[in-house]
Structures are given as C-alpha cells and as structure tokens.
Image (cartoon, rainbow, N blue to C red; front, top):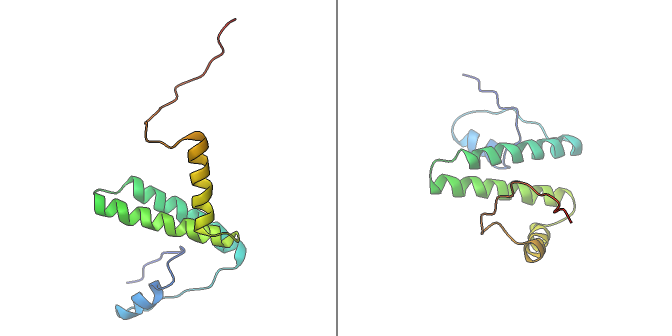
Length: 111
C-alpha cells in the first residue's frame, strides 16, 4: 500500500525505509524549496511538542525542533551556537520565561 508523505525528512530516513523492506521515491530540494520546507517542518515539530503526551515524547519532539533550528541556522550561514548566544544575550537583557508572567494589557497613566 502506498503512503504519500510529501515532506522534508531526516537524511537517514530513505535508508531506514529500505532496511524495513520498503522502497521510497525521493528528490533533492533546491535552495528555495528547502527553505520553505524547513519552515513547514518547524511548524510541524512545534505542533508535535504541543501535542506530546508524556515527558519522553516531549523531549523527542523538542529535540526535533532543535534539529530544525540547527538546519535553518546553517542554511543562513550560522550555527546553533550563534542562536544560543543571541538567546542568552536576550535572556540577560529581557529575562526568560521562568516567572510565568502573562501580560494582559498596558495603559498610560493620566498625569
């Protein structure tokens, strides 16, 4: 039975499919397609994080998000360490999310 995927997959997936006794039809994306598919993959993986059902599944999905972020950074001639460094700088300047602050609204005080 044929299964249609039409999505970006990790590099070793075709070999894994073959080792499972199946065949796959693949193609190599050009740069514009690759960029588009990486962003689609990021959304897919983020949704899987949101829908994870346990700690193990959550960690697996977070790892997938991290790998997509690494690939996007590399596509843009950066490294994951560059992303982490900027994240650390932003955290020092603006804070993280540990305090669970939920901003409802802002307003100007009358003088």
